[in-house]
Image 1 (cartoon, rainbow, N blue to C red):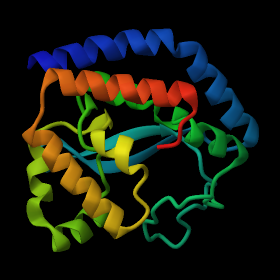
Image 2 (image 1 turned 180 degrees about the vertical axis):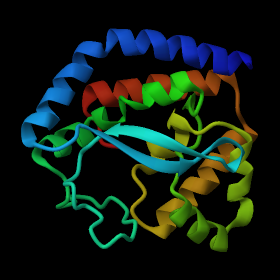
Image 3 (image 1 turned 60 degrees about the vertical axis):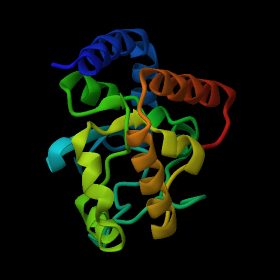
Image 4 (image 1 turned 120 degrees about the horizontal axis):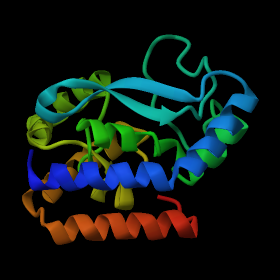
Length: 191
């Protein structure tokens, strides 16, 4: 186990303890609206291997009724009332602390994507495969400065930013990404 993975797991363990009351509040709010509170979805991560990513459910149960994966859009009408709130403040991402503890993810890295969208990205830029050298992250440089990806143009921009992050990785850059993400989350800044 590398140093980064070790620290990720230790921090994830303590974060799960500290945020457990918030977990409970969000869980109850989603259950109150109806349906399961935890959403799991297969994503592709380290070494190109699939894993189950966990999130608090923010969308209706029929969000992808046609079976074709759809990207989140601004003002997406598939969001539930609670879902809109937790998505705005990124509280839907809290269960990914479990992914970090399990070793599927790191705190900082590229955002993991579904195989369906990776195929489309790879048709445009096969460099996506270089991301598989590291674990995907809960936080990312690209999410801070590129926000949610809702079309192919934003996905390709995110890929460029993720590749630059990999080229210029330092412990300091990870610390800065975590710090800025925390400040943005607490201040309610959209990203």
